[in-house]
Image (cartoon, rainbow, N blue to C red; front, side):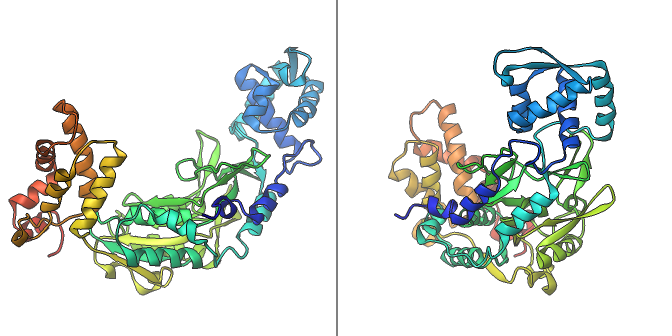
Length: 446
């Protein structure tokens, strides 16, 4: 098989790494000397006593830059050495009274303490170089196969995922609860190349946070400058909790940073708007907010009233289990492809059930799989003819593990499986009510 690393760390990414080599003196770094001095002073004041190596770990700044800055702060009577060894990195510093007073003043204006940010100009230059000509992609077949290997069935949906990834084209995905909408779309990110982003950006003295570990997964290869991070293509998802306010960049006074919205965090990857129509706010207002970022691949945020342009090149995915016509044509043009997901067939749900049991390292035999299949096959064939969802397979596997442990069994037995099926609320309700009544109970149109 072709080396997948050649795709995820290609020639373009290698060039990006060369552009973000760690600066080793104040003349080479893109951040102003005054910002760095203030940042270092705030850290020393907060810790009281701190070694240079700790300052390096916190700020990501090269020791030679820290040496220049600390000598200047010493000369200004802001801090003083309290000890250390032969190497400068082992020297310890403490805050002095003028330094503490100055730090308090700075903290009031800008409380941020952490890794040194990248300048806005540097961010914009590097990001523009990466995103230029990003689509269409030439995705190697092994990359596609590896990304989709966990998806059972849904052949048409897989083809749409591949086409969407190649062209950077959004799509609309519709299906009932448990049909695998989120799981399916999450696999798309593995087909997209990674992206290099700064953890923080500095703009007019303020700090903007770009890196979010909830959505940004670090790649094995990392650039020399720790202020930058190489991440897999982001998969950012939001659900019924989404509001138009959460699509804005807002200041967090506790962290002292402007926290970017899902629109910006999804740059270089995918933004899934799940559960459309279930937001408290009119979903059309939310979708209207996306039109400019989608059209221009850029958005405008406001930092202390000043407009700042940021990159927003992402693939939009709109998802719902309500009627498709809740989304108007103007919004569908931004996501012109589609995937319609129906219930899986018995073979598919049994395969997913088996995979979940294997992932949980559970022991079982074929009689368990056959009994699980009977729940969904037609009554004429000796089954119960319940409506399957992929969520059933996942849930029953987990419940079965818990029941097995509770019953002090070594393997998943038929009794364990029966107890697990009885314990699952949606299966129990389907068994109790007619399909029409069950649909009305869970709020689904018949």
